[in-house]
Structures are given as structure tokens and as C-alpha cells.
Amino acid sequence: MEFKVIWSDGATRDLSEVCSYIARRNPDGALRLGNGILDHVRILTKFPFIGPPYPRGTHGPLRQIVFRSYRIFYDVNEEALRVDILHVRHPSRDEPNL
Image (cartoon, rainbow, N blue to C red; front, side, top):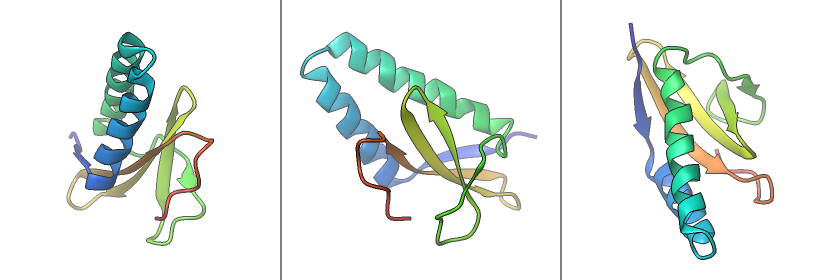
């Protein structure tokens, strides 16, 4: 049984901003990073609970996984077999508003 991964508007915007910023100096690196994050998130289709709980979530037990230095925040809806990607954050940025 696989879960469906849904990217929120905020997460899509985060990923786009990260890749655009990096692409100014290193277009190939931005492409590798973006594809790496997308590939890494695919693991959640089979293992949605792999990431540890994120203690600061206001909507219940949110989780996070890490790709390189980027934190990917997500929520699991077990009944709907769905994983919602909420934000992608570099540690130099403020905590996301969850």
C-alpha cells in the first residue's frame, strides 16, 4: 500500500525559491538539489512515518525528513493514505509557520 505525496503551495514555493537562489550561481547544482529533494521525498510513499515527529507543529504530530541541510516538513493522513509536504527549509531561514 503506497501513500500519495501532495505538495502544498507553500512547499512548492519554498523549493522554487531555493532552486532559483542557487541557480544564480550554479544552475547545474540547483537542478541536482531540486531533483535530489524530489527523489528523497518519494521514500514517503512507502515509509511515511520514517521522519521523526516535529515537536513544534500546531496541527498535530507533523514530521520532518532531511536532505543535505534542507528540512522537509510534512503531515501524514493515514486514513486517506496521503502525505502532505508542507515546507522545505534551509537551517539559515526562520522556522516555518506550521
